[in-house]
Length: 115
Length: 114
Image 1: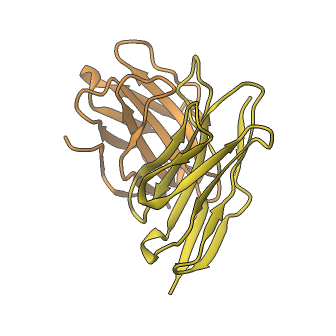
Image 2: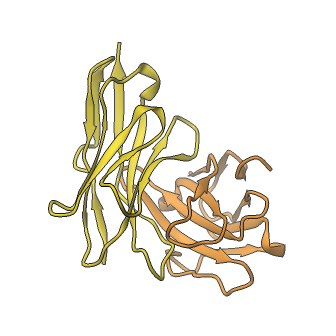
């Protein structure tokens, strides 16, 4: 596609429910990133996928968070047993190869509200 | 470890006035530096980046930034802002080797007033 696509754009859920957030990266981009944008706290790295390599999950805040990337393309971020502190905008980005010089292209994000 | 400080959480400025958004970083190694802009309900878009070479970097929409190694700063400037520049601006760093993780500042909300 022309850009990084994320769905849904908004998600309201009840505390304790599971949610799935989807990211479609730019076609041909081998690297995919998830970030969390919380109010007043900037962007926090969550997880990184590069090709067929094992993902870097070092930024995931708890074991309630997981992500997968199927076929080297679409990625799903899953949050189990959501808590109110999970409320944030979740941003996905992709880049061509995943080096430091690479420009990361961001989607518009999914705004998650946990009631 | 690297860190990025954007001291100004909000900057109001009148249309056609100049603006400077401040970014300071802390790192024991050289870094790549980036400025991203986020318009309402949109993702982040790259404004400009410094990898090496000339310390004055020009970006899109008339923005520029200057890398100052001695002051560990990478301030963003525009000589004359427009209403359409109202957005949130993020400074980010990344070490040149072995990593791909941006370290972002907390952002500066630029509000351009008519």
